[in-house]
Length: 289
Ligand SMILES: [Zn+2]
Image (cartoon, rainbow, N blue to C red; front, side, top):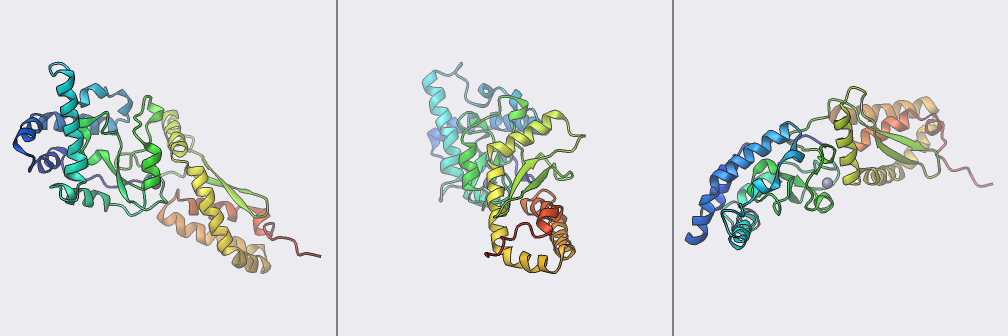
C-alpha cells in the first residue's frame, strides 16, 4: 500500500550466504538449488512488475517430484524452507544480519500504514514457493497483524494480488477518502475511491487489499481515537466560528497530505474540513437543560 525502495541484494547472494555454514550433506543438496532460486527470483520479480503473480505456476517454485521421489522432494522442500527459518531468521544464522536489515527498512508497516514493523512477511508463501523463501523482494517488513491476516495465501486471480510495496506505487493519486458520520460521538467511514483513469484491475486489487487487511475498521478506530483526544480543542475552535475550525482542519489536512496523500489522517482531516455539519459544531453534545 505504501511504496518502499526494493532491497538491492540479489536472491542468489542471500541464498549463498544463508547456506554458507550448512553441514556437508545438506550443503550438497542446497547447492543443487542455487540456480533454481536465482531463476525463480527473476521470474517472480518480472511477474511483480507486470502484476501477473497469479499466472505463476507454484509447482515450478519448489523441488520437482519427478525426477525426485515424493519423499526426497519433501525433504528438499523442508531444507529450502529452513534456509529462511533457521539460516536467515535464526539468531545465530549466517543471514540474520540480512533479516535485520530488511526488517529495519521500514518502521511503519507498508501494508496498513499503521502497525509497527516486527517481522518479515513472505509476499508469496514459502510453504508453496520454496525457491522464494529468502528472495529479498519476496520479504516485506510487516506488522504482526498484517502478517497474520495474510497467512499463507497466494493470488489466484489478478484482482487477488495484494499491493506490493516494492513494485506498486499508487500514491501519485488520491484513492483513500473518508466520510463523516453525523452522530455523537462523531465517527468516520473510510473507502477506496479510485480516480477514473485507473484500470478496473487496479481498482479491484486496491479494494481487495483494503478488505484483506481490514483497513476500513483499522482506520475508523484510529480516527475515533484522534477525535476523542482533540474534542476539547475542536469545541474551542468551533466557538470562534465555523471559518476558524474549517481553516484549522484544512491546514492539518494539507500538512498530512504533504507527506502522505493516502494516510488515514489526511483523509480524516480532509473529510472534517469539508463537513459543514462538523465545522458548525454538529459534533458538540447539546448542553443539559
Ligand atoms: Zn500492517
